[in-house]
Length: 114
Length: 110
Image (tube, rainbow over the protein chains, first blue to last red):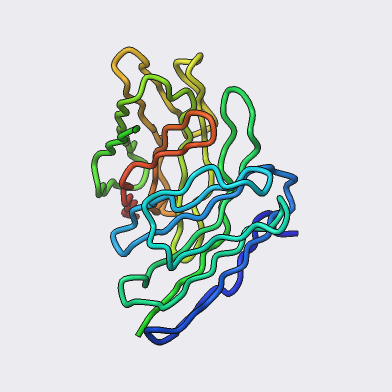
């Protein structure tokens, strides 16, 4: 009954490969996000989808492509992986509304590119 | 865009003492300020939040204060315990956009 679940938890791959990370939320939220956390723990927004529509697309290489088949799922596909892509990637969700509502995070996917 | 600064980056306290983490933000349109705790190998978890129409909020040993005029907000943890050791993040949000501070690594020494 995990609220935001992402798979896999660990991903080790070689440079040049293509990989995907999946995310699902069962909170009924209408907005989902991908964040990247580097080795210094900085949390950087990558993408945000609201009801399957892209609403935030920060400066991210176009090798990264998010896909939202429905509002409960937001997957991240990465082409031609590079060493610098190594990081922990977090999926999150929230409910749009006035006054603010919190982000709920998954437990992360640790990506290691060798 | 919004810029959130967080201090200190590391903090060590003796068990039972208080810990204070401070954040400033730049965009007066931000109206929601959550705090997250991240334990090793896990995602950030919400511990307390405050909205712009409130100056202070408390939940047991944790409290948050907000000064909208000065654009700063703080997290206060009293009677710290070893299990409070973690990385803490502040955030400022307006609508669907969340901007995070750079994190504070808190160590509570038994």
